[in-house]
Amino acid sequence: MHKVMLVDDEGFARQGLRSMIDWEACGYEVCAEAEDGEEALRMIGEHAPDLVITDIRMPVLSGLELIRAVRGTGNRSVKFIIVSGYGDFSYAQQAIKFGVRDFILKPVDDAEMMEALQGLAAQIEKDEQAGERSSRQSRTALESLLRGHASGEELRRHGELLGLDPEVPCCYLILEANGILSFVGADQPEQRAGELRLEIAGCAEQLGLTPRPCVLLEHKPGVYGLPVVLPATSGLSAEEAADRLAERLRRRTGLLFTAYLGEQGEGFKELRDGYRTALNAMQFKFAYPEKRTFGYARLKGEELRRLEFEPAEYARLQEQIEDCDPDKRNAGIEWIFDQFRSKRYTPDAVHNAVNRFVFGAIGTIRSLQGDEKELLSLDPMLSWRDYPVSPCGLRELFRTFAEESSEMASRLRKSNAKGDIVKIKQYIDSRYKEDISLKSIAARFYMNPVYLGQLFKKNYGVYFNDYLLQLRVHNAKKLLRQTEMRVYEVARSVGFDNPDYFICKFEKVEGKSPTAYRNELLAKT
Image (cartoon, rainbow, N blue to C red):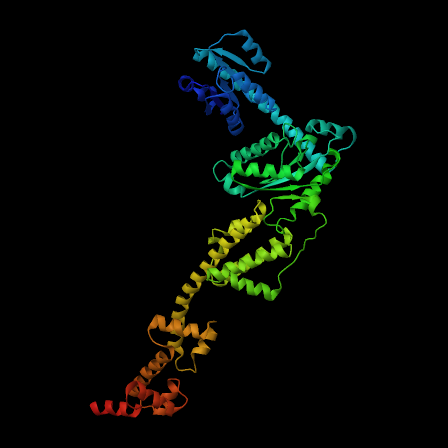
C-alpha cells in the first residue's frame, strides 16, 4: 500500500475526502492529516508519504509554499495532487513547475480523483523500481570505493553516482543501532528494519551530512555506514555533526546510537582509509562506555589491550556471579565491567571474557543435571555480538543471565538434594552394619558434612547420629530376640567393634542392657 497524506484547513473537507474514496482499491492508505502547510511540512518528514493531496489556500503556509518547501529539502520522490476551489490558471502553472501531477477543482468528483490516484500509483511503482535499481548501483559503487578496487575512469563514475566531489574532504561514518532487536521485533522485522534505514538516511540528509539521496550500507544487522561530506559553511566538525545525527536518531527511534567516524580524507578516493579507521574507532567501545561518538582522529594514539582474567581471579569471580545473594553477584559483575573500562579491553577480549563466564555457568547447570536451554536469556547472551549492544546494555544482559542461571542452579541443588537424601537414607539402611559416619557418607555423595547433617534433620526430623544409633539398636533387639548370638557377636553384627560401647549405647536408648532385654523376653515365655 502507498501512503497518502491529506492537507486542508477545513476538517470537513478532509473527512469528506477520506470517506468518499475507496483508498484500498486504489492502492493507498491514509497515513496522516494536517490542517495547514506548516504542520504538513513537519509531518511529511515524520511519515514519509508517497502522495500528498493538498488544498492551495491555507493559513501559515499555502499549498504551493508547502510544495516549494518540500522540493527545497531535496525531496523529489513525494507526489502531489492539488485540490482547490479556485480555477486560476496561474496556480496550475506554478504547480506544474513544482512537478504536481494533477490539479483537481472542488467539489471533488470521486471518479476523477480515483482515476488520478490509480495513475499515480502506477507511476509511484515505476519510480520505486527505477529508484531501487539506482540505489543498488550506488551501493555497489560505495562498496567498491571501500574495498579500494576502483581507479581512473571507474573511480570518477563511482563518485559521480554517489554525488561526491573529488576535491571536497570526505570521511566515513559507521552507526550502531544498539538494541535494534527490540526495535525490529518479531512482527514484520524486514519492514521495521527498512523503516529504520529510511530514518537514518532521512536524518543524514536533513542535517546536510551526505549528498542526496543518501547511500546507506548495512554492514551487518544494526550496523550502518555512509560517506559524510560537510560544507565549509556548516560551522561543525565532522565529530560534532555525527554526534548531532546520533542524538536526532535517538529522539526519533528511541534507540541508543553510537557513531564511529573514520579519518577525513582529501576526497572520496580515500574512503577506503576512512572505512578502515572507522572500524578501528569501534575497538574503543568498551574503553569509553559512556561515550557516544568516537572520532578516530582523537583516538589513533591510544592503546587497547587483549587481556584475560587470571585463573584464580576467574574462579573467584565465577563463584561470585553464581552466588544466590544478588548483592554479591551484582558486585562481581560491576567489577568485571569496570576492568573492561579501566584496563581498556578490546571488544574481542570482552567477548572472550564474557563467554568464559557464560560457559562456566552452563557447566555448573550441566553438572547439576540441568538443561541450560531452558534459560530464556541464553540465546541473547550467546549471540550478543551478532547485533549492536552498548556496554551498559551488555552489562544488563549479563546481569539478567547471571540471575537466571544462579536461580536455576539453586533450584537444581535443592531438587537434587531431595533426591540425594533419599539415596543417602537407603544407603544408611543397607550399610548400618559397616563403619559409616556422617563424614564418610558426605564424602561419598560429594556433599558438605554440615550441610548433609542439616538436610537429614530437616527431612527426617532426627539427627544423623541418633538415627544411625536407633537403627542399630532396633536391629540388635531383633537379633537378641531371634538368635542365641552372644552380646559381643550382636554388637559386631550391627556395626559396633567395641562391645562395651555397644552396651552403653543400647542402655541409652532402651534404658536397660542387652542382656537384661533378652532375659525379660525369656521370662515372659
